[in-house]
Image 1 (cartoon, rainbow, N blue to C red):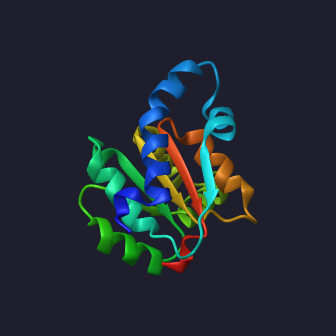
Image 2 (cartoon, helix red, strand yellow; image 1 turned 60 degrees about the horizontal axis):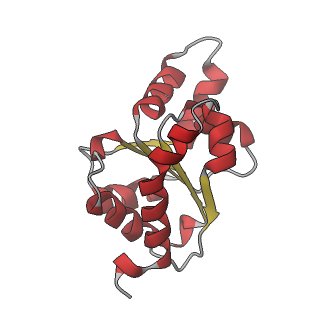
Length: 158
């Protein structure tokens, strides 16, 4: 199947295209409430081409790749992402960085500030395989993200 016509690609395209209008209609909601009510969070079948769909969405639209952040879980995930998207214009970080930053916030706020700035400035944030057992990470990602947030679980099959 052509990646352009894959159901995941179509879903991501539609959500990313309609996001600005939806956000404009709900400016009264704080980020966390908005992303809980209107955000895209799905469990993706492991056989689906997640990275290819994301890449198509980013390339098919006039998205500023430098304003895109991808949150990953493991070093292997990072290697796959870096291979698929390159490293210069997309920002990557592990959810572990946010989790660690939250625990160090009493003594050192540099880590949490870096992550917060990255999420606040990003137009598009893709969160791959969020940790289900650590809801505080997801809550902070939702709260810090001003732009379009897409949460995709089940990505490990790639």
